[in-house]
Structures are given as C-alpha cells and as structure tokens.
Amino acid sequence: MEKSYVIGLDYGSDSVRAVLVDASNGNEMASSVFYYPRWKKGAFCDASASQFRQHPLDYIEGLEATIKDCLKKVDGVLTAQQVKAISVDTTGSTPVAVDERGVPLALLEEFTDNPNAMFVLWKDHTAVEEAQQINEHAEKFDVNYLQYVGGVYSSEWFWAKLLRTLRVDESVRKAMYTWVEHCDYIPFLLTGGTRAVDIKRSVCAAGHKSLWAAEFGGLPPNAFFSALDPLLDGVTDRLFTDTYTSDQSAGTLSEEWAERLGLTTEVVVGVGAFDCHMGAVGGEIEPYYVSKVIGTSTCDILVAPKEEIANTLVKGICGQVDGSVIPGMIGMEAGQSAFGDAYAWFKQILLWPVKNLLADSGVLPEDDLRKVLELVDDRIIPELGKQAEALPVTSGSELALDWFNGRRTPDADQTLKAALQGLNLGTDAPRIFRAMVEATCFGAKSIVDRFIDEGIPVKGIIGLGGVAKKSPYIMQTMADVINMPISVHKSEQTCALGAAMFAATAAGIYDKVEDAMKAMGQGFERTYQPRPEMVAIYAKRYQQYKALGAFVENVAY
Ligand SMILES: Nc1ncnc2c1ncn2[C@@H]1O[C@H](COP(=O)(O)OP(=O)(O)O)[C@@H](O)[C@H]1O
Ligand SMILES: O=C(CO)[C@@H](O)[C@@H](O)COP(=O)(O)O
Image (spheres, protein in one colour):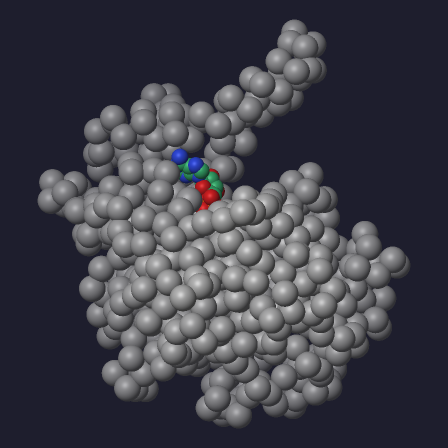
C-alpha cells in the first residue's frame, strides 16, 4: 500500500518548525526551521514593560517557508498526494484581535505597525492589573469560574490580554470583531475561513486560558464580564460556545493554500492546540507522568483518567481540562515563565561590553566583530554549564530565585521578580550561573510538589525541548533536585512530532491519538537518575530557596 505522510507545525516563541513524517512509524523525512524576522529585530516589543508582540506575517511567512522547504527536501522521495494532513501547535495564550472576516488587524494597512493589533505573545505581562482585577472580581460570584484554572487568573491569559487591549487602544477596539488564539487562527487560515464566527476553537486553549468549561455550559456569562468592565459587554456573543479536541479535523486545505504550499486540497487540517500539550503526546506521555517541555520557559503537562480525577481540583496550576491533551483524559498544565530565558538574560548581561564597548571601539572590522559576537553568543551558556558543573555544591553557595518573568506555577503571580542572594567577592559568572540553574530546577520541583500535595501522584518526569536535549548538567541537577528519574525523549522536535500524530489521527489514519503515539513514538534517549549524595544537599538548598521566595514575596516595593 502507498505510504502516507503528515506534517506537524510547531510555533515556538522565536521560530516555527515543520516536520514531515511517515504516518506509519513517525520517521522524520524532513524538517525545517524559520526564525521570525520581525521578532528577531525586537520589533513591537518592549521587554522593560513586559510587552512582547508578534506580527502575523512572521507566522504566515514561516508557515509557507518551512512547509515548502520540507517538501523540497523530499522531492523525488514522495509526492504531494501522499501528504494527508497538517496539524499545528503554538504558544499560548497568544491571542490576536481579528475583524469579522477573521483577519488579524495587523494584516490591515492601517494597523500594520500597531502592536495592539498583533498577537500578544504568552510571555507578555502588560495585563497584570487586569489579571488582578479578574481575580478579585471572580470572588464576588457564587460559581467559582476560576476553579479549572488553578484558582488564579494570570496576565499571560486570554481575558486579561483582551481587556487590556480594549482599554488601551480605541482604534483596535473599534475595528475588532473577536479575539482568537494563535493555535485556532492558523487552521482557520489554512482552511480558507472567511468568517470569524466559523473559527473552530480548541478545547485546549479555551479551557486553559479562556475560562471555558463544559460544566459552565461554555464561557462564563456576559454578566460576569460586563460587570468586570462595560468594555467587555457583549464580547462573549462574538466568541464561542463549542470547542474541539485536536484529534478532530478543522477542515481541508483551501485552494489558495494548497497552491501556495504545493499540496492538494484533500489535506486535512487538524484542530490546533498549545505546544506543550501536543509535545506531551509527541513525548509519549503516560498517566501521572509530568511531561516538561524545557525551553525558553517550561510547560509541564500531566494527564490522568477522568474517572480517577473525579472532583479533585488542583490549586495554583494553569488549569485542568477534559481532553486538552488526550481525549478522555484530564490534561493538567503548569509551568515556569522563564527557564532558558533566565540563562539567556544572564548571557545578555555578560555580552553587554562585547556588544557595546567593542562595537564602538572600532578595533575590529565589522565582519570580525560579528563573528566574535556569534562565537561568544553560542559558547557562553555551554561553557558556563561546564564550569558550574565542576563546582562543589554547598549550603553556603550563591542562591537565586527563578522568577525572571514572574511566577507561572505554583500560584501564578507575574508581578514577582527574581533575586540573587549570598554574593561575595569570590562570586563569579559560573557561580551565578550555577545558582540560576539550581533556581530553575527548584522551580520545577515546586510544581511536582504541588501536584503531589493536591493528591495527584507523580510517577516520573519526561524531559522534552531544547534545554532537555542540550544540557546534561541541567537535567542531572533537575533529577537530583526533584529526586525522580527524568527520561529525555529521542525526538528533536517533540512538539512538532506530537502535532504530526494529531494530524494522522485527524486524517483518520489512526482511530485515536494513543494509537498514533504508539506507532509514531520515537522512544527515549536516556534517563537521568537522581544521585543520592546530591539529593540530600539539594533538599537543604531547596528549603533555602523556599525561604528566599517567601521573603521576596513579602517585600513590597
Ligand atoms: N546549552 C544550553 N544549556 C542550557 N540552556 C540552553 C542551552 N542552549 C540554549 N539554551 C536555552 O534554551 C532556550 C531555547 O530553548 P528551545 O527549546 O530551543 O526554544 P523554544 O523555547 O523557543 O521552543 C533559550 O532560552 C536558551 O537560553
Ligand atoms: O504557556 C505555554 C502554553 O500554555 C507555552 O506556549 C509557553 O510556555 C511557550 O513555550 P516555549 O518556551 O516558547 O516553548
């Protein structure tokens, strides 16, 4: 029988990658990465104000470039007719204002440079005030509308971002018809949707970020939102009631997109979801394992059979949603707002003189300067890791808090900031880096602890994503800190592979996504076992981290 192939598209924070895989066994035939050009230049962002916006053209150009590149790579090996489906995962909550036709406003000429008309990236925290108001407002109602999102609403999410946008930008407010997640927009685009009301909303985004719950009959009522701010009056009418799991089809490729990509109009486009949810499937998650996509941030997923979870509500996580990962199971999400981003911040600090003084000095020709910068940029984190690993861990070592981008879990509070304690004149870059590695791992432990404390057993950890693959030092430290084995998945592109598994299921090649996972899963490359001698010292250090955290949380300034 002729072989079938599927495409998984994974939109990360900095880049989008596509993988083209054999639907029968998950073997990767081709892959391609595209870095968002406008984002790379820092356009439309202001890190000091926590404003991070992405232009829809970055996404659309990336979609076309990566899929075409994959197809070029397999030219002569397989035909376009053999490609049966595409599924997409994205970051989230990363919503955008669209007009009645479902067109993101930044694609209209008058809004092309307006950050409020662009996708508000998950890590944008401009809506902290709005999130706080939602939390206070929710307390006034008999129904607890925050019960399925850990009891705390975050500025990283849908409603806080929507309210902020409506408040700060009258022109966007007037032109906006509705508000759409990135993972719901791309399937709509690919299937040639022309009416925003037709956008199929994924249960993953809706349940984790928009307060949608079957138990509420959909979104909270208009009365909830209009009492929060009259600007929200009527907004739910233009949102949605129905949601879909990602094993379902959102439609087939439109003629325009089939032609643009060089595929057929028979290609099924699956319902989208968030990266870590599809990543958990790509990483072959099992009930009660925490799957961690460890990259810029971490996004942690645990699945458990619905009947076993019954009425258990886990406090302080980013939600528990029926079918957000695997249909029929409750998908629970948690995470850290900065993981690799914390290391990237430190790298930027260290690069400051190279970027600023050396560039101004004129000592090096421009081309050499660029090469030096690239070399140092590439080598700083791996080299710091090597040096940090060689240092003895003691209870008097420098200690850090990982809240560089606020705290996502446990108990979302994006106003919190990171800290560094215990410095002396002997503190050097590797020692600071070590403290940051420990802090990010302590943050990871606090999530596992929260699940356990709330009655959800954790059987083990699955490591996915850039950091899990690149840094044995960090993964070993994490295994020691959490005191649990961590298995790192073989796949280089687990989220994209997960999307491909969903694509194969949406196309009907598999009856359910668990079957796709079994057939297409790539297995694990290695397991980090906790080292007993390190477990003991890190247990002490973890208590110090908790004490520092409690102190910082109580310092008002
Ligand atoms: N050798 C390394 N050790 C630890 N962290 C690293 C290393 N190389 C890159 N990183 C971090 O990995 C993060 C990017 O992770 P990745 O999974 O590739 O991307 P994304 O989160 O956008 O999907 C960056 O924040 C960077 O600081
Ligand atoms: O928060 C979520 C999903 O809810 C992620 O999209 C977000 O952490 C982004 O992940 P990356 O670190 O860019 O892979």
